[in-house]
Length: 91
Image (cartoon, rainbow, N blue to C red; front, side):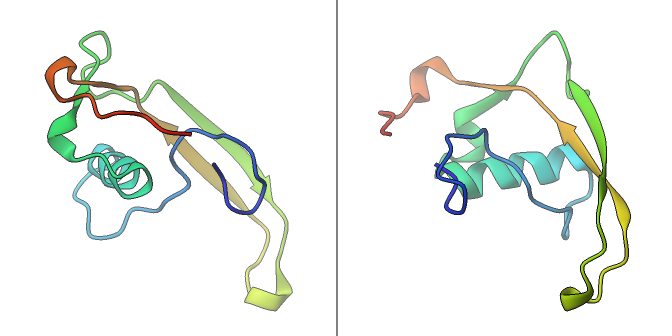
C-alpha cells in the first residue's frame, strides 16, 4: 500500500545506491518494501535478469528541491516467490 497515494502498487521507486547493478538495486528495493528476504525470491527463467520493461517519463522542475526538469527511467524486473519460502501475505 503506497503511503502517499493509498493505492496498492508493485514495489519500486527506489534508486541505485551502493548496488553494483540495476538488478541488484531492484532486488534490494523489493526486499526493503515488502519485508521479503533475497533468498525468498528467484528470477524468472524466461528473462534471466533482463528488465521486463523500461519506462522513460518527463519530470517537471521542482524549484523547492532545486531540481531541474529531467527524464526519469524506471527499470522493471520480474521475480517470483520460492515455493518453499512463500510467506503469509497480508493486505
